[in-house]
Image (tube, rainbow, N blue to C red; front, top):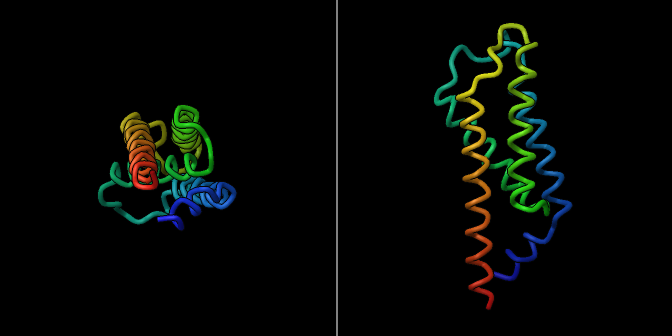
Length: 123
């Protein structure tokens, strides 16, 4: 269990992974439609999982829960609005923004639960 606590304390590592995840989301979200597969199964689930993971990584990087939530949701909204300028992409989808928001909330809730369980086990 100690190794898990140590891993959690590597904030720079998590910050780097969070930046990479944010870049991956941006690349996937802002690619022109010609470069995308014809259909992506479970589009809203992809948003939920992607932004849930991003939020958890931002939380692991040391940002407080509320600030991490706001930052990740704002990033998701910014990406959706940036898609408006991408040829062949539908941007500004409120359901994508909702999936992003719910994913971020879930990711941070899971992180808080895991941290609580780790504190309880280490006490």
